[in-house]
Length: 164
Image 1 (cartoon, rainbow, N blue to C red):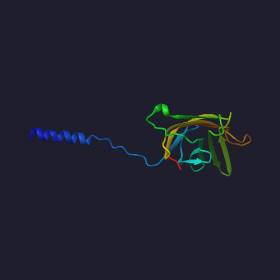
Image 2: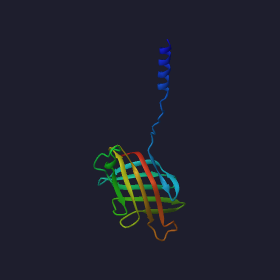
Image 3: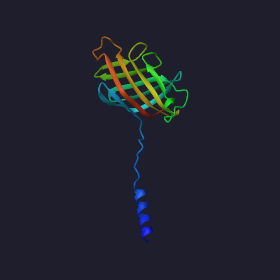
């Protein structure tokens, strides 16, 4: 009887030692913009004409878009050397754009050839969702605007953003 009771206690202990892991249903897109947390909602990834991919998220008055070539192969997050890195500031097909609406003013910041810098690293892509990291320094496109000259975004990441 003592053996059965001991066995039941051990089984109950093992069963109750589980960890409750919740899965996030919505996509995540966030980073540190000018030293403050920035988290965008409605994150989407859209395949556009010419096999271009735009990953975008927004707040009430801000939009961040990452434009890169569409990955031509599956990127498995379990294969660390299989990541795809896109360097920003070297091409018109690889760029970051930050839009800020303030009252009636629209401020546009972006990277382009020789303008700004940064990178987008794709760590997961299966045709349905995309995940990765990013950082950039984007310059104000209007030198006569009253907006700040540069927007800095560091430690950015997007996770399981749906691809449409």
